[in-house]
Length: 75
Image 1: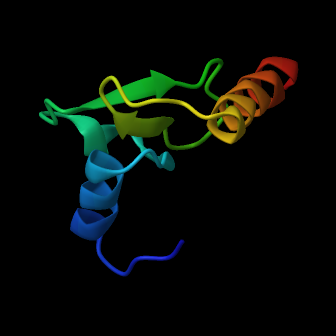
Image 2: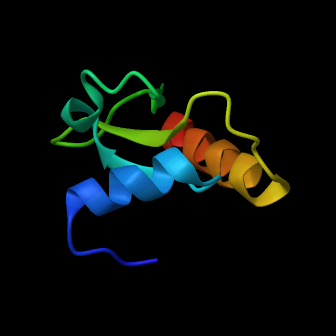
């Protein structure tokens, strides 16, 4: 999915089961969203996966999170 505004992306994540990859400073003071840290961080910018607190994670979401963790653990 593509959105032209960060606020739209945050609202989509907040109201759906979707997850997104954003710089970590975006999630500060977002009570209804959680940041899933990617470690080790190899980016010039710190990035996190962002989703609504307590959101159901379907198989695709779980696989994407696992893949992201594996990718960054191997680097």
